[in-house]
Length: 364
Image (cartoon, rainbow, N blue to C red; front, side):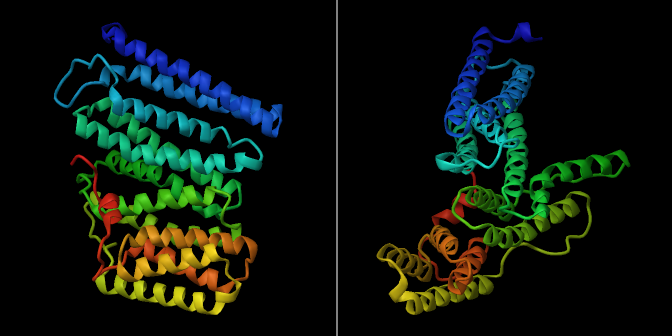
């Protein structure tokens, strides 16, 4: 079957293998220089094993590099598949940190950065495929394979680094448990319905990915992230359970859509907390902190890029908690911003482009 694959397609797969090897060697060298040879070898070997699995999977699925309704593979991978492969390489590098001590120095930023960039590429590869007409069965398979793998690795690292409680591993395992449940259901001869498209599901997944990337960065103290991880986990898992009931033809017990009144109420509470925090801490805050808190509060109050403003204030609260874990105003602001990220600002918002990005796919 492989002999029927166009020569250029096989050549591009080989180039990906070569580039992966060079990337693993370069990464191992940098880690060795920062943390010692043993860490460099550990990272390099584990990353190479994952890359080897990825390349083998790619090679075996090359016949699927065709468009819907066609059989003949395209003679090239295409820009979208190359972006997906790059994402897979970044996630392989992320997996390399599993058996290492927690990175130090500039490397402390590497796991979170790798996952953040890979997540942004996840949004980009699908958009490129749809806009360029390059959607293929191979691209869909690679995309789904890397999605679950990346979440599982990233969630495991948050637990290993003490940034999330052990039960947060359920977030990384959720997709696999969901698929296992569907397989078990089918084995019992039960009928299944297709999963209906849902904008709320997409938004929740995007927020969860952003949160995982954020707590992998050396910004938030473990106590704060453990509390936040639990808050983020509950609605996310509730969404999977709701989807399970819908696919298995059971009655849906609840909706994850936030009532507009509740969104507006959380927005009002968040603005109030930020204003009180500003007034009380005015003399103790630096000029950059005053500027960030003031701008963020104004944007949320007006409903202008409110979720981006909430993320900015959440990161700011994290830096404050690193210096003073007992600061009640930073805790209150962090909690309110987490809620706002989930609910949005509701009615009377002037401009919320991030809502569309979270809920839709470019090119649809």
